[in-house]
Amino acid sequence: MAEIKDELDRKLIAILQGNAREPVSSIARRLDVARSTVQERIARLERKGIIIGYTAILGDDQDHKRVQALVMLSVAQQRSRELITQLESYPEIRSCLTISGEFDLCLIVEPDRLEDLDAVLDEIAAIPGVERTRSSIVLTKKFERQRPFMPQNVYSLEN
Image 1 (tube, rainbow, N blue to C red):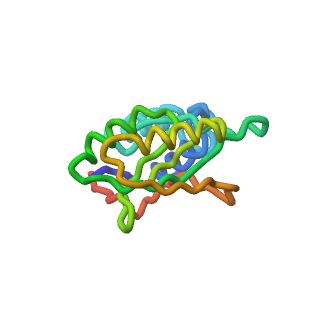
Image 2 (image 1 turned 120 degrees about the vertical axis):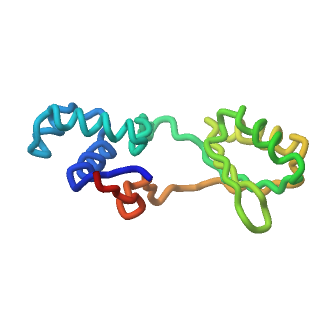
């Protein structure tokens, strides 16, 4: 399993999760360690697969809020693999989750306008293997969390 050496690694990961673009020199000052120590730690965490990438988090553009919908799909199981491959081609589909219960998949769909949502829903319903759909439009987002770093889920190996 991935290796987190100590509290310094945990603090470094927390800082990078808050702002992955923070300069190494600034991180070193905050952690009260040498700049080379921070660079070596980041390189090791990347090499070990603890840090697997960096991403841009898009801000809310108040003048251009996107429509968001949750779309539940019941699918023919023998066609689910090719169906999911087809769904991947839709840039409006932000996420595709397999779920238990009455439906098989839950899509998070984010088109620019309601008219675009209507068109995407029609297209999804027409894909072979989709047996039925149920859609809910998100009215407001009360809060949202980024996936936090959970050190208790990572086992540390002694060197």
